[in-house]
Image 1 (cartoon, protein in one colour):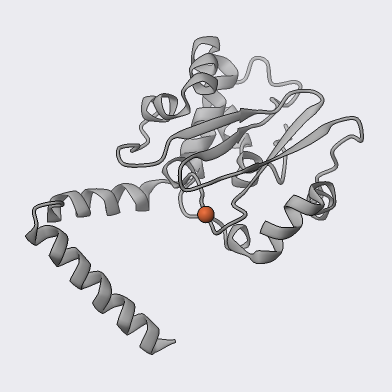
Image 2 (cartoon, rainbow, N blue to C red; image 1 turned 120 degrees about the vertical axis):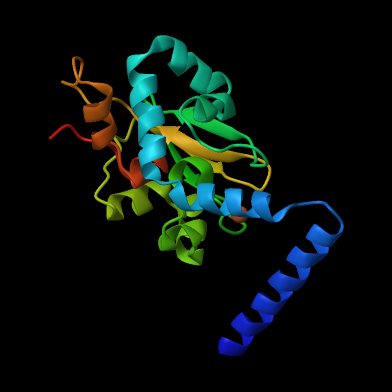
Length: 193
Ligand code: FE
């Protein structure tokens, strides 16, 4: 394992210096990207969700152009694949999976949880989404369609969950605090305490 890490470190250093030598990327750009990657977290996605729940114009923007909506809440989208927002509705629930590898909307959710990359999640979510969700304690009514959406290198997806009942007069901050990582992948659903 250590040998592999040493080799990948050397490879990274070689590719980085080559890109810099050719003027394709500057050290400042690399530092900027690392900083944004490390500050992205599910809190950003939760902000997007809360704002979409409260503001009809932003809701429409999120569904039409997720990338623009993410930029509007401060996510760093330059160079990132476009973001799509999948709205859950009564009768329709979305679950996101990258069947091929681990494509994840990092700009709005941060690093993917370990299980998102697991072959078990990737394979089983496609075959038996309802069964996988049940293991998370998420019961989707039988008459609700579960749509499994493949996140890819070209397009990243996040879920806009159903707004919990009884939250009509809640502030954006309070709503954002309800929304957790799994809710935006679709394995769990937000609940008003
Ligand atoms: Fe992937």
